Length: 117
Length: 113
Image (cartoon, rainbow over all chains, first blue to last red; front, side, top):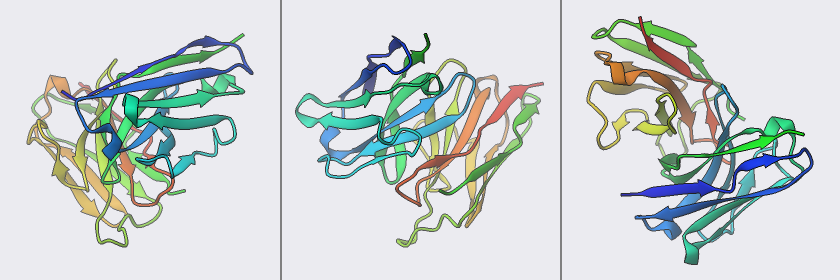
């Protein structure tokens, strides 16, 4: 059964940093674009970043550009999101998802990031 | 970026009755390859989203056939033929035609009357 398991969330002060991880299993991770999507408390879904199979193509939404960096390690079947200069408005559940056919095939269960002093 | 607009925001439905959710895009979602990359996702309370429909009308494996997607160009619809209790949640449309930015609709909350 396909699994995506996010980790690394928690409470961080404004201006701080956090690194999220997403461990993939039961599918060929290296065949997929991967993406991060977030959901602020009580709000809708916001796509924030994706990375191609080899990491040669990376894109970040304007809301996180210059602060967040997506990366992956195909040998470890893992996706990452380095988040720097965190703001209160970055408080959200962060989901990783596998991208195929310009859609999001598989989703993780999410990890909560809270930015507060 | 393409703006996706869903309506209604909230949809109270009687069990066993049909439900319909509209999704409109600010630009045509027909890709240069001829496909239309419009997906629908369901998010039950306390759960992560799961996809129901891809490329307008293709149901994912395991999705009940009471769910159907239709539409073209800029206007799309998700229909539930007979709402069941397990269908309660928020439904999102998403466009994947206009990269690099994937965009979601604002969501429609389906609840039982």
